[in-house]
Length: 318
Image (cartoon, rainbow, N blue to C red; front, side, top):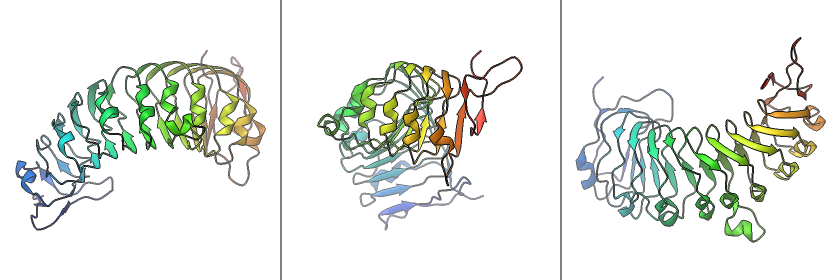
């Protein structure tokens, strides 16, 4: 197929994208001359087959740079922080590598999507110091290391934080949930927190239950210890609660049954015992889409958790 040319200087928007899994016909690279298009405020070239490095410079008035789901490589250009109007920066699902430049975080930034690449090292503190307007952050499916910074809690507008499938380690600081509104007795703004498949240890901090708006929580695939708090029953907006493959002990609290919006509850591969709360199994007219626990029995194995309505039963740890 022929390369399509999409840079039309008479327009403020450059868009050749389609939010689908199949790709468009754009191939080749983004020319460096794109930085000379002073009037352009949005570039959306997502879901194509573009390669090469990202342009060193972008148009000075740009609001949105969206090139996710391509084949870009190399590292993130420095000095992104100079783009004082940049609100949306999405380069997820490419082949990007290297560390995050400390000067890539403008104060106007609201959406940062770097997920599905090969970024390494730690998350720079300049993210928290400079980009306090962040609402949606996706750093999932990379190779980030270090601890999960307590300074995530300083981002008052943060609704979505995805850090899953990395190499984060250490304990989970309760300060992540200690925004000023939560400290004043309100709730943090978090709706989605995805930390699954890392190397996190320790207990689940009680401060989490200040996040009254949480709808999606994934802590699976870590090494959390301790019990499942009955306070999970306070998170009335919860739809997906994923705690599989940790080292949790004790019984599953009945208070989980109070979560009337719950669609997914996954707790297999822990050291839990008892039974899935009856309120969950009695849910009508909308049963859970996914309900799994260590509820499988065999001649040589007795289940730890009794469940009459689980979608999936596992034998769990031996």
